[in-house]
Length: 614
Image 1 (cartoon, rainbow, N blue to C red):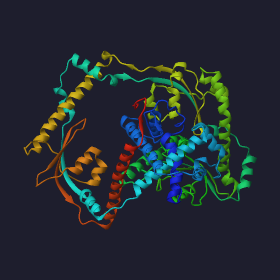
Image 2 (cartoon, rainbow, N blue to C red):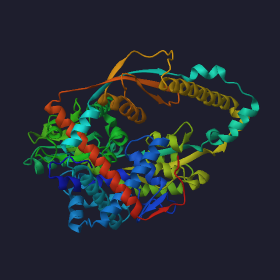
Image 3 (cartoon, rainbow, N blue to C red):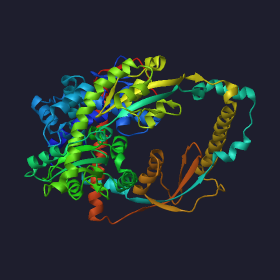
């Protein structure tokens, strides 16, 4: 999980690695078949499953751009791992053992290493200790390499002054846009042109495969409601533990700051706004906290367990802000503010509070802990019974629920769902892969029990609609709209290019410019796209004449005029210090590019037998 411990940097690196095992591949990542893969770098194969799982575990969109960036990152990771091996980075068995036993996801509610929890994780994901340990070794090598790439750099006075000269300049700009909508009326077409356009863009008019399905989802929260704990057992627990230190059973949702760099204020503000929205939701529905943790938390190793950190004491093991928040709450309460640590923004819930002042005061917390532990045991027992019943009543999940659970709690997807929509809705990757397996779709039988964290799923496809190319006449109006949009875009860009060239050649062109806007480099970086930002940096006025650049935006090509530049001088000590950090980051990025280029040329790369799936 993300590092909530205040130890040395090496210990931090050790403890973050298990999280990487979840974040990079998610549960089931390494157990997925690798016969179909995109690329093999050294001895690491990357598949479409790895890419999609990485995105889901990082709570990212499954759009084309995100998929491409995820694939680029996983390739970079593979190259750095192979590079680490080449320079002799080795991980000892003792280091691996320390990492496993220090990971909170594998501890019981008393803070002790839980062998059963660890074994359950292994059995349901990596299948063997050797595979898991191999993945941890790779992740630790990657973390070492990333750390040293980002932190071992010297910045000269000249480099710092160069940075200040470029990045502490404010520019006065104006712009004029050429909205595509203004050119639509100029577009003319006939049926032959539309049919030709349809033939060239058939992929855009395909209907994706979609399904409807029933599902049974059993969680510890659901099972807790079915468990009854005898009063004498609650009293016995109190008597056995009343001399102990106060404890809190804590769950959290965390939105993490970017790793390896200090977050700027804009990034922090954006994350905080997201956290505030989630906090508002969990306050309204506290009983769904674990669902929100699974959906939103970026601590992948606890998100799958409903965000549970287990039982903690106020002893400095966790960040002070987390401990202070947790120990100010009682059983079932949610901290009413966002908690900030070095790692990110946390939403804190106390599932159980035990201060050992009196039995009546601690009873609710003790009952919850005992119910939670009993619920976990019951779910494991129920899993086997559920698996047999699902097989015997393979065509009716409702009968399975009625027989094994005493009531019908089966839910339905309702509307048609594509694989992409299922990913966007946050359905676990393991469940999606089962639902869209060709055998599941053709047979329409109950699945085996699917283990995701501490919850269990059984699913059954009830209806399916295969992928197909829609006929031209069926989508003629959509084709016409797309054709008009494309042609209007071409007309708008041609007009913008014509006027841009006239301006650059010194001609006077009457345009409706926006009012002048003074923008700093920091503001530009926060508010402009990457292409816009690069153009903003590189374009300058010259000899009193404006500089121009053209942005080829899809909806409206835009010409930007740079009227003047002003250097923010003199520089304060605080500004110099901040600029030093930023210039070091830039040097680190350049060095990373240089090292990766070397690795690309010197590490074996083999093209896979499939292509990137969008």
